Amino acid sequence: MSAIVLLSGGMDSSALLGFALRESREVDAVTINYGQRHAREIDSAAAIAHHFGVRHSVIDIGSLTPHLKSALTSDIEVPDGHYSEESMRITVVPNRNAIMLMCAVGVASSRGRSKVMTAVHAGDHFIYPDCRPKFIRAVSEAARLGTEGMGDVTVQAPFVEMMKSDIVALGDSLGVPWEQTWSCYKGGSIHCGRCGTCVERIEAFILAGVKDPTVYAEVEFAKEKTALA
Ligand SMILES: [Zn+2]
Image (cartoon, rainbow, N blue to C red; front, side, top):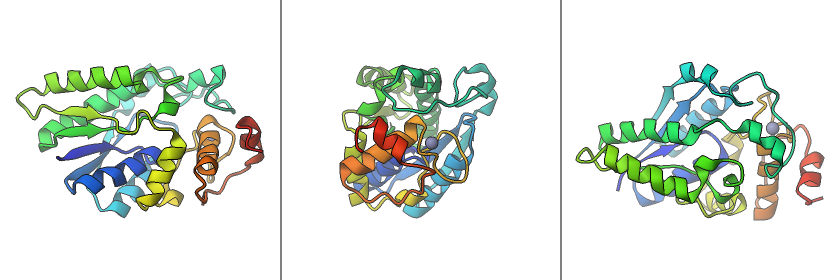
């Protein structure tokens, strides 16, 4: 098998890269720059790819950004809180995974890679429709049909039924350098500890029982939100 891993620079996709490399060395990392507000995560993706010694390509689709309504691609304020809250819906980028996956499928077909791997996990299902198993099955079939006779590329999401804490435990066993990963949606020089993805990050390390090397502006807010206080 050979694969393209969609690498965002966050925890899940970094663990996925380690996971994919356990099966094969024929793995490339691809990062889609869709104009996320902070370039920091793209720097993290490059550092993670370097750590694992894989080819890394950054694909810029930033001209799409002004046409997508989301707090991640505009000056709409990123809300504080837990992902399970209704207010988090503004962080959804419409159809983001489909857009990124299909870009990577084209690259995979061009490079003779047999599949594209994405790190969507069970915790994403609540607010992101394009992270659900039903979507993954459909997009994989669309990818295969779209590359029929040109590699028959499929899409795989091995973490789709896993919780983030399970991914932290797995990634830790694979030697993911967590301190080089980036989750915060607000940017800044350190993780804010208050946005949905920071709260999720703090919670996942605690639940996994893995030491968290991240420097946060604060952690008490997250602990209150996740009842981990
Ligand atoms: Zn944050």
